[in-house]
Structure formats: C-alpha cells, structure tokens
Image 1 (cartoon, rainbow, N blue to C red):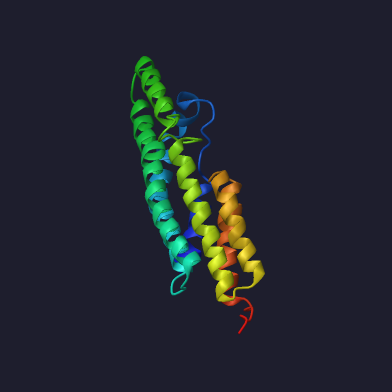
Image 2: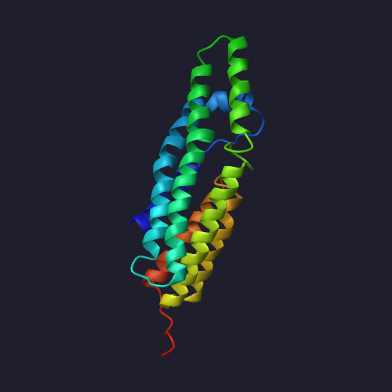
Length: 200
C-alpha cells in the first residue's frame, strides 16, 4: 500500500505547490498558509516515499538492494532537513509576516528570501538540495537494478529508472507527477506484471 500510495498521494499534493520565483513578498506571502500546509504534509510524504523505495527491495538480496535501502534512508533524512528549512521555516515566517505592518513585512520577506536562497540549506540549487536529489537518484537506480535482478519486466525497470532521473529535476508540477507516476507505475508493473525468467 505504501509503495503505491505514497507517490500517488504526494503527486496529488504537489499539484497545489506554489512556485517560488519572484521573491517572498511577491510570491510566498499571498499563499503563505497553503505553502506551510503543503510542506508539513511533504515532511510526512517524503518520508513515506523513502519508505516506499526501501520496501520496493524488501526481501531482495545483493549489492543493488543494499544500496537502494541505504540511499532511501539518506534521502529521507536529507529531504526532511530540506523541507524543514526551505519549506516549513519559510512558511512560518511568511504566515507571521502577513500580520505585520508593510515595512516590517518587507524585512521579514527579505529574511525569507535569504533563507530560501541559502547556498548550503536553501531551496533551489543549494548543496542540501543537490545531495538529497543525488541520494534519490542512487537509491532508485539501485532499486531498478535490484528489480531487474529479481526478474521484473524491462518496462517496470525503465519506469522506475526514469523516476530516478526525473525527480531530481524538481517536485513541482508537472515534473512531480511524471516522476512519481513513473515510480508508482514501475513498482506496480514489477509486482503484478510478467516476470522475466532468470538464467539458471
């Protein structure tokens, strides 16, 4: 249930994810409450997504499955940290800023921009974002390889592999739906689709 349900629910939630493009005062403050709620939900859903990757290789032996498990755990920790800083912290500040006088609001919006654009822990192309995305890439590619070694059909392996490459491009629509849809479809096909006989 988690393997298919987590990416499906996350893909739905991401449909309402606001874009952060022109600075906090212009883009985040008007949707502060929605931004905060989505990132609180993401904190749970990204953890469940990592668990889905982990469970995809449950009971599978070998190096690829071990790498997938470790990568999923690393992804969960790093993405939770990313969400806490670039999502929840900025959402709390944005929500509070809406109750302030215009001059104070601008000061808080500047602080939000600074936090979101921080090169180490902010959103966008920060070091934390890059490393978290790399953890997903490694974990899911390893999971795809482990599925192949277990006898999953090539279609399933390709779909899961596509998810590995698509998700690091961002979790905003429509990319989130493509990446998460590929993962869910791939693991479903691996579970219920035709099997490829393993060589004796």
